[in-house]
Length: 401
Ligand SMILES: Cc1ncc(COP(=O)(O)O)c(C=O)c1O
Image 1 (cartoon, rainbow, N blue to C red):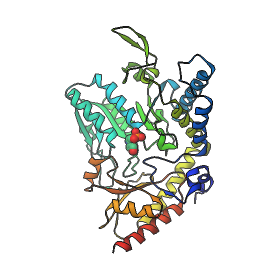
Image 2 (tube, rainbow, N blue to C red):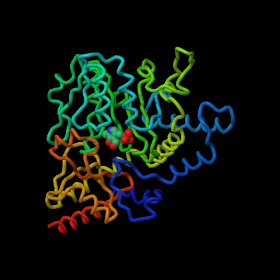
Image 3 (cartoon, helix red, strand yellow):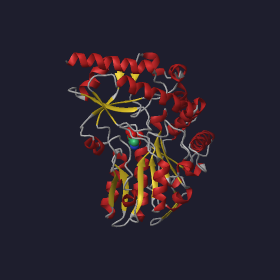
Image 4 (tube, helix red, strand yellow):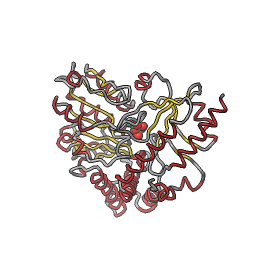
């Protein structure tokens, strides 16, 4: 049995103060002391606007901000820190792409996503399709909750200009075969985007090895502060793209009527960036790397197996999705108990899970559900957390009888 969580739970102050069983990590994660310290010391020792101030404090803030960019570049195997754009999260990263890649999209072009996408990877494309007269196509899913690529020759065709797929489903836990989709997207010359909101937190990411053009993720789902996120893109593609937002620091020269842009990646970071959050994300990356991403994945794989085994013993439970490759994001319903009731009763036990449509309404309607209960694990969860959850579920079920 993996003992990882025993070593690390004590690094997270939130667990010191209560017996909280936190199983809503796909929504956001708790923060270790080192990340909290990083935020605190940034505000108390190096708070000045980055890239602008001609005094020592400003230089210190800039150095820390750019240091975080270097760390994140190395963390995901990017070619250079110039390929890292700081955003407020995966949502902003994906919206940036839908806006900036939109100039090359024409009527009749196709944007290929899948039935298991989060709204963040649906709505920006719907808006782009509306603006440009292009069409959205969906890769269907199998009953096991995997991408159904049986008709890939029709889905990936000469009209396909953008393919944007989640690395890991935030409802079913399915880990998609990104390399396979990359080769299909390459064959038809499409730009390939990966929504890594649930990926970068749980797996060692090597963007070059994955074979994508862009990878988007959120810092707060990987121990970092809220308001921190990343868009990685191949430098030559970023160079060709127009900025998403206009404002301070993203320019080179502005006249009354014209403007030219700052270098990549700064042309994509208009206004005062969330630099303290980005520095905090750098501290989260330090923390994750000190443990080791492979160690984290092993721990989570073990815990997912244990969790599925224990959940399957519960009467009248339906677990959605049974993909061969999956992580500890598990959606379920219990017969005759509404998920919202379940969450409220679990709250009495100090157990936090998510219920609802998980910002994936098209997927939920495919599952014939309006809401599911969802537990999602991370490196600090352990078998005791799962046991407490299962015991509470059994007690709630007997209460409802
Ligand atoms: C798969 C997926 N994509 C995108 C997002 C959006 O992330 P954020 O709200 O941090 O921007 C989420 C959030 O849950 C997600 O799970």
